[in-house]
Length: 239
Image (cartoon, rainbow, N blue to C red; front, side, top):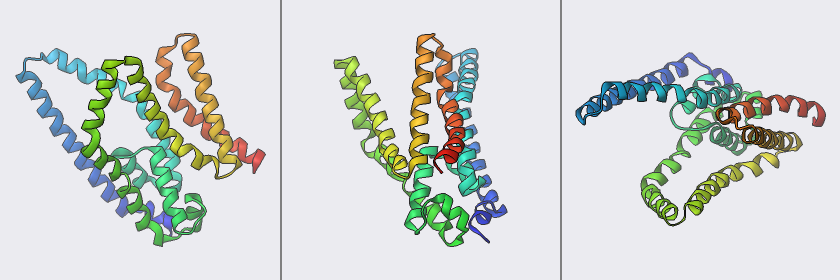
């Protein structure tokens, strides 16, 4: 079996489906316990249902970006593993970078090159790297999350603008850590990255200029779609 055949195999679909079913059951149990506890502390059923409905509605928009990311990730590492990674712990940016690092570590130019070569010996390494590396973030939150949050709260209480700035800077630092990796891969990668940045800027400016606040929730999803579409153009131009 080739790499992509293993990554799309019925066995992997079954294992991933079982894992996600377990998570769904866990979520349902947690929801039931939370619902009962809310009633115990005096919150009315109407308020609880309103909170559930509003939360469900507001998760639809962010999920659009996740679904689009699933399509892009599935083309190189198959559907079930992409489905599992984005359904449990992970993000499109992290998963693609981790998969690409595993592929380059195995001697391939990129994850796309590994997919094209169909080398089945890298499957285990790929899954291990994508799974184990993200535990660093989870472990870091467990060990240092409370302390970081306390310092952020103190900064905001002393100077609200500084606190907000620190949050924005930390978010930007995460993005900037990935951006150079993509740019140095080649002219097409650089062009797509620049296009995505330009699209984000233009959409944000339009939303602020015309006060279309609701559209801000769709900026990431639209940028993902248009950014991927632009890659087809840049491949034709830059090769």
